Structure formats: C-alpha cells, structure tokens
Amino acid sequence: MVKIMDPYGAELPEDYAKVIKDFGLEEFDVDDFPHPNCLMRRGVVFAGRDLKMISRCIKEKKPFYVLSGIMPTNDKIHFGNKQVVENIRYFQDRGAKAYILVADLEAAAARGVSLEEGRRRALEFHIPAYLALGLDLKKTVFYFQSENRDVVHMAYEFAKKITLNEFKAIYGSADPGRIMSAVTQVGDILYPQLEERMPGIIPVGIDQDPHIRLTRDIVDRTKDRKFFRPSSLYHKYTPSLDGSLKMSKSKPESCIVLPEDVKSAQKKLRRALTGGRETVDVQKKIGGEPEKCMVFEMHKQHLIEDDKELKSIYDKCKSGAIMCGECKDIACNRMEKFMKEFEQGIVKARKQVDRLNFVKFA
Ligand code: SF4
Image (cartoon, rainbow, N blue to C red):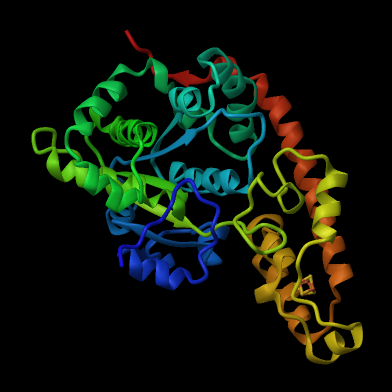
C-alpha cells in the first residue's frame, strides 16, 4: 500500500519508528551535531534527510542555509512554530544563513488573506513572534513570496517536471490549488541556491515531508541548474492536551496558542490527559506513567530547559514521589513565565522591525 503523509491533516503518528521506515527517512543521530539543543537531546527531533551533509558543513565550516516559512493566516502561532524557530536558531548559531519567507501568496490563495493584510500580519505579529522565540535578527534574510519573481518563475518551471500521478503518489490527492502551492514551496526551498549554490536544511514537522520529497525529485530532474537536494530535519508533533491529535486550533480546548491568556492556558493544562493513576494511593505505590502524559510532554518539549530538572520530574513520577496536581502546578508556573516573556519579547521585537534584512527585488 502507498503510504501518504498529509501536510494538511491533523493525525498524530502512533509510531515514529514506523514513520522512519515507511518514508525512507534517516534516524536523527544526536552525536552528529555539536552541542545539540533540547529538542535534539530529548528525541523530539527524530529524523531527517541527508543530515550528514549538513553535519559536515557545520564541522568543516562550509556555507549552508536554513529556511522556513511564515503563513500569515491569522494573528496566532502554535508550539510547532516554536520548535521550528529553536531548530533554525541551532543552525544559525552554527554558521547557517537563515531565510524566512512570508507565504503571502499561499495565504491569499488558500485562505483569501489579501496581500496587504498578510504583510501587515507578518510585520506586526509573525516576524516579531519569531524574534521573541529566539530567531537572530542579524543573521536572517526575509522576503515576501509575492515579491519574489524568481520563486514564481521556478514554480512555473518545476510544475512541468512532475506528472499528476506522481503528485498524487506523494500527496494523496491533487487539486489545482494544492499543486500551485506545492510547486511554489519547491521554489522557496531552492531559492537561496540561486544566490549561492550550497546545501540547505529545512526544519519542519514530519507532516511537511511531502514538500521535501517533491523538491528532491524535482532537483533530480533539473540537470541544468545543479541544485543541492535539500536536507530536512523533522520534529515530533506537540500533541493536543487530550493526547488525541497534533495540537491544533481546530480543537481549541486542547490547544494552547501563542500568545494565549495565561489563565486560559493554565486551565487547559489542568484538564490535560496525564499518566496519573486512578487514586493517589495507587500512584504513590506504583508511580505514574510520564510516557503517556501530556503534561510531561509539555515539560519535555517546551517548559523545562534543564535536563536534570526534567529527569528529576520523570523519576519522581515513576516512583510515586510526585502527584499530578503538584506536577501541573510546575507546568502552570512555567507557562505563565513563558507567556509573559513571549509577549514582552514581541513588544520589544516590534521596535526592531525597521532593522529587518529583506531581500531587495528590482
Ligand atoms: Fe504526568 Fe506529572 Fe502526573 Fe507524572 S506526575 S503522570 S508526569 S502529571
């Protein structure tokens, strides 16, 4: 059976090892990357494509780029965006030139957001939010998709290099909007190589792998340009707080958006699915199950930086030395601190918007 990963779906993979096998991915080897970040150390970053090429660039100090996009469909982002920014920052700090594109054309086509509105949202919220999450302003180049003729030209050129059936085999279905959006993304992914031919890495959620596969197939068929096939880095999803799907705004009661009112975020955390036992007595006796717990997932992926502290919570949970109420108090306090710093960071970053380095188009 043909396996499809839907970049537009909300499903949560049950088994990431199976995803690696089914889609022919490389397992992420933390030893290949110097000073790995929390997500890498904790197995949240779990796979990729052509990762050795990027680890060589880092070790041999050769040029490479890291690229990601902003979709300005509304004025909120989610924890998946935070993971992407942390990984961009990791590569920026190790010599990558970073590109952030604002996918205003896609937002207009898919959601009817006018180009003006997309621009406003990007400048007033999304870019400041990315800066607040740690993106390094001085080492990042930005552009708007709608202004980048090279990307649009490449999208037209690349559309001829794939058949409808091949497209369906990667994406599961093929409607004109999806095809246009996908080939435009291929243009975005390869655009930095028009400026300087070099390897590049795209850190994304695993659901975005179809775009990477399509780009790699198209590179193989574009002999005259000699692009490097893009590498990719995949992180696991932040699950919804009820553990059923990836965290998504379509399930607001189980999703914490960024930014969100602290009280509302804390209320959701208190109702989250835990790995706690039926009674306090049983939990004290046999311990909890952090592996099944969404609060622990939030500690691990987003709220606790320090590995020793995380391990201490894990051990205390397993031994029954901490109960879920106390553990949720820790998560709620961290969430409050995180949201406050994030909102303050946005306010500060808005003052830096005039210093952004946008690609100049003739
Ligand atoms: Fe989850 Fe904490 Fe309860 Fe353990 S003690 S099950 S980690 S909430």
